[in-house]
Length: 98
Picture 1 (cartoon, rainbow, N blue to C red):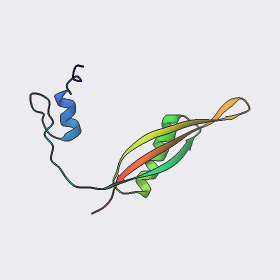
Picture 2: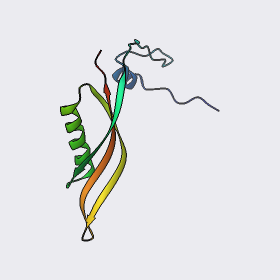
Picture 3: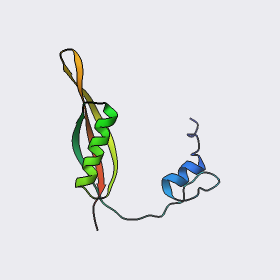
Picture 4: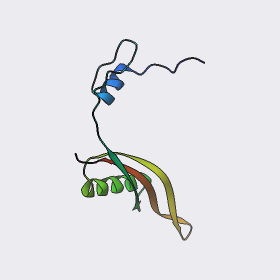
């Protein structure tokens, strides 16, 4: 089995804030942190993308240190045979204060 293709150095630098080794071993600085994940559901009459935006905006207004989100589920609300609303369920990650 062959190894996976190497990471692009610029992408690795963006993700980690560090340049990569010529063999694409990422230099990292270890920090200690604890994160929590919470599940939220958001709804929009416009689109799934808007529902995600609504959910992330709400999470940011309520939680500190939101660092990521994963769309776990998408649902459509159908009314009279037409799409009436878009709903997403997301796992939102936030880093706890020290």
